[in-house]
Amino acid sequence: MAIMITDECINCGACEPECPNTAIYEGGIEWTWGGGTNLKEVTLPDGTVIDANEKQEPVSDEFYYIVSDKCTECTGFHEEPQCAAVCPVDCCVDDPDHRESEEILLARKQFLHGE
Image 1: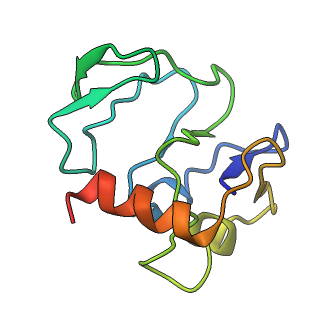
Image 2: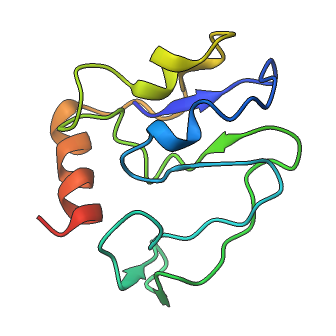
């Protein structure tokens, strides 16, 4: 499963630099598929192909957020999700809407980093 940041976030930013996939962004900041990855272009579920550096709408305007399609729970990098390990208020938690196997998380890591 992916990790999510709850609305208890105090916007300290401790989690952002810990993410090996650059899946964490400050509230209100646009995100890209390419940031922190080796992606040049991405094919969306509807078949549309976009430039990986094309800016995407923020998931949250108020709090730091995690792009679930870029989150690997640090699988293949660390023993545990680093955002959760450093969060001072324990608001980086499992996202019940995005439950995924280790196999899927490893495949996502390979996709994001061109392995």
